Length: 458
Image (cartoon, rainbow, N blue to C red):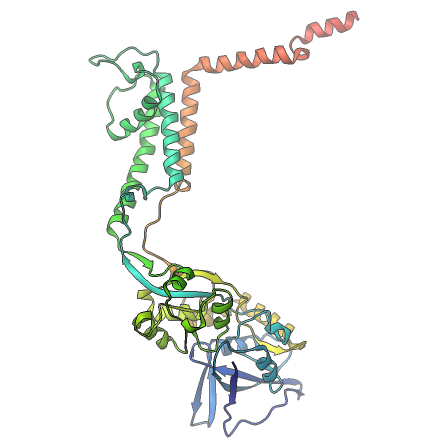
């Protein structure tokens, strides 16, 4: 597993020693080329008889140079990388490359083993390894679809609040006589769990007039009906979405599905992702296929694993987001993420320039220029951010208790206050119980006058 590095030299390019000259530092910088021109793009300019180097990484370098505390003259030399097999940018090759140049600039991932041989700046773009797979269209429905609009914790709290309100209303209505023209009111029914639970639910579905008599009972029932109305409207809307909207789901959800199915997977040719797939994700090397460009990714995924292509592409997130920007309508990010530090500039070990360029990167990020550079090459969405907008699915989510917590709190407090005000004897009974407890277990405070008199006699 090795790389062959070829320097592209134009007739006007001359050697540069990377030393201090005329009050400025001359840096010899090499830029490795590969199949993602958004990061590094090298074009031969016949009019000027030299190579023109551009791209996201080069713009970041130019922005950082303007924020250094000294003048820098850059001599950028592109180099072709021809990987023969396996992972690229091995430590030994980077070390050898820096023996000829003062820095390496490009989409070079910061890895722990590489830091033993070279110095990295702080990352100027986040990264991580994930997979992109085709999406499946359809609706995931079964016999329990009707409970999906609400999460299980919300269903449980609905039962609890319904039971509490039913109990409160039956307590307040317990002494009321039968209503006119009715065989009997709910308060005359036997106080059992079924009655307590079903009464609020029945009123939410089929409300009846004059079902309660006391005004505080009506107040509690009104609060419950308000809560029930909001819950029923939300349930109906979410259930409609689940039953009618087209849902996007990954065709393969995780690495285990790929391994069990014996699928072929792709990776970027010459990338360290090859090592990650073997060492971390435990893939059989015979199931790995290298590709070099976004177009090759697309062709392989269209063919599929059984027709000479692959079932998934593993690569670093910035590359995959570029792919999704181009072909994202039928693909989605999925699976676990193997995290790494991101992309950084490379300098020789113990270089004095590493700290200066790291501080320059931080200044560029904080100044907002980094956002402008990212938007120039990748669009408005940050290509290296934590936002996984490419992973969105149109499948509606179950509503949780957190969405209605405020209404539940209002309903609970209102019911409790109404119960305490309507049934004053409960407060009186609590006060008498507290007083009896105090007199029995805290005698010193039961009769302070008597205690004071006894103290005087003594």
